[in-house]
Amino acid sequence: MHAMTTLPTFDTLAAADGLWTGLRLATDPNVESAIVVAQGHVDWVGPRSALPLALHALPQHHGGDALVTPGLVDCHTHLVYGGQRAHEFALRLAGASYEEVAKAGGGIVSTVRATREASEDALFEAASARLRNLLDEGVCAIEIKSGYGLTLAHERKQLRVARRLAQAHGVTVRTTFLGAHALPPEYAGRSGDYIDLVCREMLPALAAEGLVDAVDVFCERIAFSLAETERVFQAAQALGLPVKLHAEQLSDMGGAALAARYGALSCDHIEHLSQAGIDAMREAGTVAVLLPGAYYTLRDTQLPPIAALRAAGVPMAVSTDHNPGTSPALSLLLMVNMACTLFRLTVPEALAGVTVHAARALGLQATHGAIATGMPANFVLWNVREAAELAYWFGQRPVRCVVRQGRIAAGSAGA
Image (cartoon, rainbow, N blue to C red; front, side):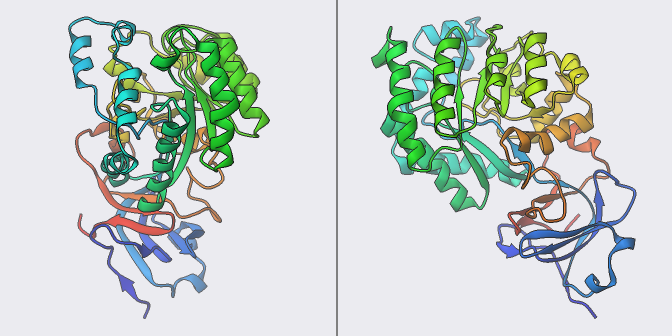
């Protein structure tokens, strides 16, 4: 007789090794499937009927007929920051535009002030609480950007917190240096000098400390120009770091085409993306990251060019863009719903957007976004009958069990 273990109730760090049965893969929900985990990696996956006899004797975890997807990936967040900006939400409701709020001293710069004033420990505690919301919903990998420090010391503080979060919560964190997020007040009217600081001092120092996995820029009328963006990209390239870009959110600056020339992992927001930008992204293999939370919060009316991206075969990821000003979202499943309802993605497109394509947007396609032999065990068991329910429901968490980094991070044996 083989041993049968019940799934843990919550918050355990039990190894996920063994035979997982009673599963229905989202890709083939009508067939009972099984997953074998060995030393934290997927050793076998497929129909239960095809399971090799030698594996039948392994200790078992019974999934209770749960639907299974890869672990979710939140590929664009600004999770580490001080304060909040609810007052700006009220200002926008009263008619102020994003640019008007920024020019009045709000926006990114107001969060910079709060982040500079906060200690590293305070930032860690606040970000931990936010992260737990995402992890409880099945997120197994997340990107965390800097960009609210805008000095070497404070950008370092943000990135150190991001590394601490990975260690403390057992989650894959990709750090992105976004020093070119906004012009700090002390550099008013001197954007060129600030970009010098970013390229010559901040980025090299932080990269040398092992705190940077990728480099991003906010390329926009209220942020940095194409020429300034390219200088940052050149500095990243010299250090062997991949680039990403906040592109075409408020206007068509041609940023996506520039980013594609540098082999960008992703271009994000892209509501005003042109066909030329789409073509450049397709050729470069750059992922389009859709951020419906920001679109919704800003009450935008310019939809991303979904049909053109689809026609070109550009992979589309979906993310929370969690940040205090324009997307205070802590539910990736809600973003899946919004991507379908607001942007007209299909359910398979939206789910691919928070798994395989989101992993690719972070350069993590070899370790996340799929359930495949040899990959680390990152998967979620859901109390739903069909994959469409993951996009359909909002306001509930149908998670049955989360396996993250080969460990049972959370779970329940109940239906």
